Length: 105
Ligand SMILES: [Zn+2]
Image 1: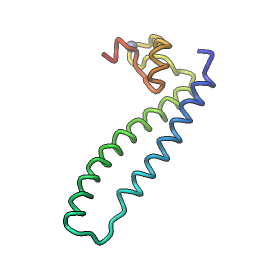
Image 2: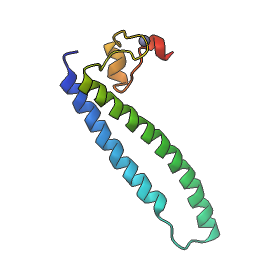
Image 3: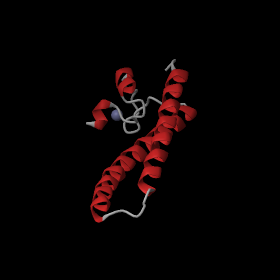
Image 4: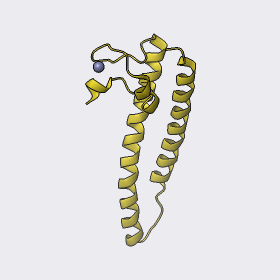
């Protein structure tokens, strides 16, 4: 893998994007004022949506941090399950993946 720096830059970029998004989602979710019942109902619905977004963002963030760790250890791009190299095209599409296409499917 000769474009490690490029991959790292991409992962770090996505990581700060996700961190920013997460703090925005959290700020929004905490905003609770005196509201009418109707507004509270809308807010509850929004919170459910946000909780869902929150979960998937947190998951992706964890995967990206893991991928950066694997870069540090020099094992990035290897399948964690079978040890084979992950296809560059797959890494291109999913930079944080840790499984080759065979093991992931
Ligand atoms: Zn594999």
